[in-house]
Amino acid sequence: MTADLQEKARRLAYFTVAYNLAECLLSLLAGYLAGSIALVGFGLDSLLECLSGGVMIWRFFPHRGLSAADEARLERRAVTIIGYTFFILAAYIFYEAATKLIYTEIPAPSLLGIFIALASALVMPALYLAKFRTGESLGSASLRADSRQSLACGLLSVALLIGLGLNYLYGLWQADPVIGLLIVFFLVREGRRALKEGKLCTCASCGLPPPAPPPPQ
Image 1 (cartoon, one colour):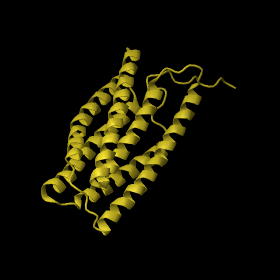
Image 2: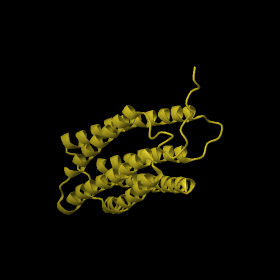
Image 3: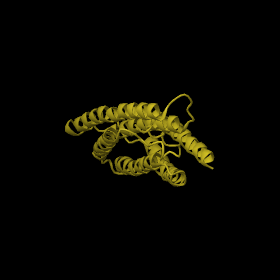
Image 4: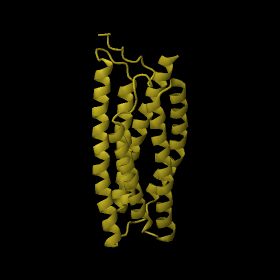
């Protein structure tokens, strides 16, 4: 039963990576064409989702020849790199969003961006439910945490949809860089969490056997 749940967790991680990679490329393209920092920021956030999903795939994949301590050390290293990447991208998006607000760089309306945000607003809550229920059945703290990240991405999609919609329907271009600043807040929060925790899960919470206790002295 545990093996089946771990396989389901891997399939969910594969889907997360594939979907977010497509979302990243489309968002960056739409953001470039429209001059939208909100779409560019959303695309970069999707790229980080891919990195996080890759860590989850590795974490739930059967390993041979690695001790529990080795796995934990490699996972901490991967999550630390992702955590610092959050801050780098947050600084870039903050600079671009502030520049557009200060110098009145008006982004063009983006119908493609609206469709991207709408699709994500529909897909991510469903992915959240699938991950959370699997994490509950597996007893995996990391999968439940990853499910909350999918839910946050869904909420961010709704915010993006509102911002793009206001610009498309009413010409309120300021909504675009404001949503970009909202994405900055989200990236900083997630980066701090990753660096503070330093890991996505423990061996026990992933449904894997915990490391053996040290022998008595």
